[in-house]
Image (cartoon, rainbow, N blue to C red):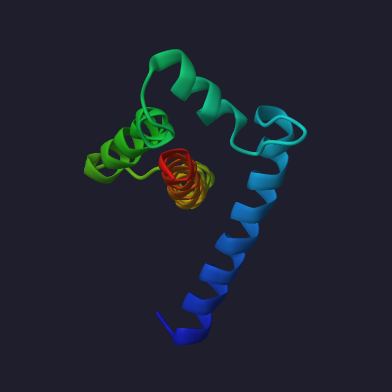
Length: 116
């Protein structure tokens, strides 16, 4: 594969990811909290948002793994959908990790302020 074709595939994938993230954000997030579903899942299950996300993402990971192991050829549209969803879960994971880190730092600062 030539460099230009590879770069075009990556550029198109990035555009697909952003489009789906925007569309799904309207469907799954609240107006003021893009991580709403993961935050509520965390509260309901008593686990971290990362763990909630990992539970949701495993479905996509398993599906992609099964497609890779299948000797028959899948439709390109199916590959694009699965790959886009999986990339988006990884992008959301980055936001969740940053959010949880920020919350942890904020809680530590509150605890230090109470001890002073």
